[in-house]
Length: 456
Image 1 (spheres, rainbow, N blue to C red):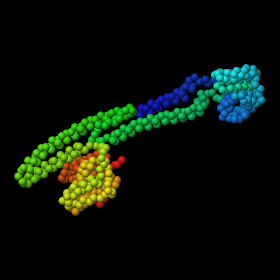
Image 2: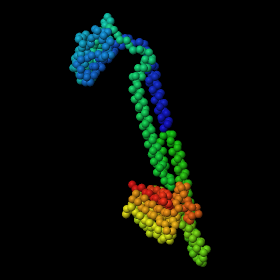
Image 3: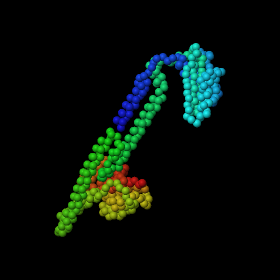
C-alpha cells in the first residue's frame, strides 16, 4: 500500500512538472505579437462569442455591444464598423456588407440550402487592410450553423500583453489553476479509493483472524488480493498457524490416547482392590484410584469439547439449573450448605447441548459449595438476558488469581483437593456455546461466577 502511494505521488508530481513547467515552454515563441493582429482577434472573438451564444439560444438580445474591456478600443477607433449574420439574423452598427456578395458567399448559402441533406461545409477567413484601415472577414456554413462577419475601421491597435517568460507563467497559473486543483482532487479520490479497498481487505483478514478457534486452527487467513507489503506477513502467519495446528493435534492425540489407555488399568486396579480385605489401607487406595479415574474422565471430557459450533437443538437454562439443583442438593446438605435457586422468567432458551450445559453449571455449583462454610448459602440465578450466575459467600478470590482462574490445572489454594480442571471445563463449554464465563468478587464478600450466552 505504501509503495502504491509512493508510485502514485511520483507519477503525479512528474506529470505536473512536465505538463505545467516544461512542456509549455519547450517550443514557446516569446516574440512580440503583431498589435493589429492582436486587436483584430480580440474584436473577432467578442463577435464570435455573441454569435455562438445566439445560435445556441443562450441570449435573446437583438443588439450587440462590445464589452467594457474594449472601451479604449472604441474611443481610439471611432470609424470602427461591423456587420454580421447568424442563422439569417443581421446585426450591424450601420455598416453595409462589402464582401458578402463580392466573395459570392450569398451563392454558397443558396447552394447549401438546395443540398441541405448533404454534409456540405464551407469556411473562409482573412484579415483586411486598406491604407491603414484594418479589419477582418469570416464566413462559415456547416452542420446547420451559418454565420458571416466583417468589420473594419481598426486604425489604432491595443497594446498586446507582456510576452516575457514570467508573464507567461503567471497566465499559466491563472489558466490552469482550476485544472490543477481538479487533478489534485482526482489524485486524492484515487488515493482514497485505494486506501478504502486495501482497508476492506485488511478488515476482512482481521475478521477471519477474530473468528479463529484456538482449538481448531485449520482455517487460514485469506491471501488473495492483499497488498504486496502485507502479503508476506499473512503468509508467515498462515505457516505459523499450520505448525501450531499440527502441534496441537499431536498434543491432543497424546492426551486423549494416554487418558484412554489409563482407564483400563485403573478399572482393573480398582477391581483388585475391592477384592482385598477390609481396612484403612484399602479405603485409601480405592479413594486414590477413584480420584485418578475422575482426573482421567475430566481430561477426556476436556479433549472432546471443541470450539464454538452451531447447535441444532434448543435448551432451557432454567430446566438445566433445576436438574443440577436436584442432583447437588444432597452434596450441599452434607456440607451444611444451602442451595438457593432464583429465576427471572419461567424459561430461558438458547441453542446448545443440554448435557454439557449441566456439566458446566454443576462444576460452578460444586466449586461454590467447596468454598462455603457450614450455614452459608450458594445462590444460583438464571436471568432473562441468558445468563447464569453462581454466588458463594466464601473467602473470595485474590485479584492476582482472577486472570488465570480458568486455565487447566490452575488451583487456588494450591493444596486444595481436585485437579484444577473443573473451571477449565466450564470455560470450554461456554466457548462451545458462543458464550463467556467470568469471575468476580462480590461487594459484600464471596465470589460470583457468571455464564453469559449470546442469542441471535
